[in-house]
Length: 449
Image (cartoon, one colour):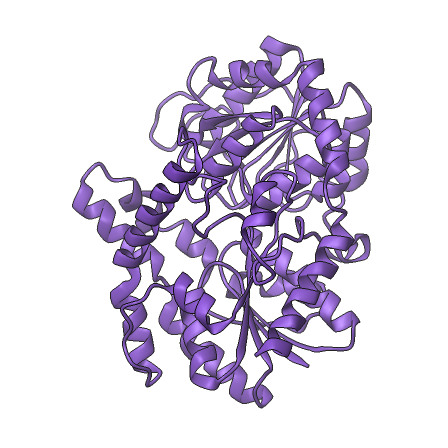
């Protein structure tokens, strides 16, 4: 079979799907991999011969549209920004995916993540192809997991989901029908979840049933819960992130050996990393981390992710204001990208944005967590971790306020929380089993088309 992967978004949206691509290739399937242009080098290091598809996700996340307009206090500006972000890059994805399918002579299946599903589904419909989607969190209506904090009970949960689907459809309906028109398809008044269900598409639930046990019984074989997806050891080694990558190394040569020495020279640290999420004030975050470490008597390993921490040394900010004192290099270490599977088991807790990939890595390492969430599914993961007794959640923008980060960490740095986190980590579906199940589901989508 030939599977065309149409993977757009941030690294957290793309990397789990690359594990499935590698598994399908291992089984002898032909896999054609299209990824966001800025992630072509990542997929290339895995040997997947990727082609650029859609738009640069790092540029989008760093744009004024995301950083400023989506957070505007003006409701009209905020709604316009949400609508624009919801369909950002759809034209490029449509034309790129069509060209990719033409170049390879068609496919059996189009495989996509959550982002860009509307376009991928329309292209699959136009070409008569099967479709499979990878969901890294619950995004379809159910009575088990609420998308909003504080909602309890199946009836209320379903009501909230129904409202959310109407809002989403209102934001994307015009853009989606524009894409359908460009493909020569008729317009639709039915939102995507219903159309995918009616078309028999497979929506792989790529997260662990231990965190949402009721979903297994509620959703049938077209929405299988496989467990969290992750690259195997060999693939992770090819990424070259066992120690640290580019970025600031707060007291060493930036290499794996230097980081190993720092990790060994003291108690296990707290890991702090926000992946592709934009940190508004890196200097203030480092000051908050340093203060929390001093208060609690712990160390911290800070991964810069897609952020620039090179100027966050506590000297003088660009606006002329005096920054907070720089972090103690022995207490707080700043590095670039790290291999979560290699580094997190050497830590004692994690502070992260609540992305599904980082959440999975921290859970597998048996770590309690402070989720500093921004948007999308991140508050949901914070709620799920809190419900499991292994984490707390705070809005990311509050973590630099005096005492907030230290207080949140104090809630999870106790023996009882650590024991619950370790026990939960031991119950998760092993990553190789999860990847195999997801690949099985993709193949089943082709067979059932």
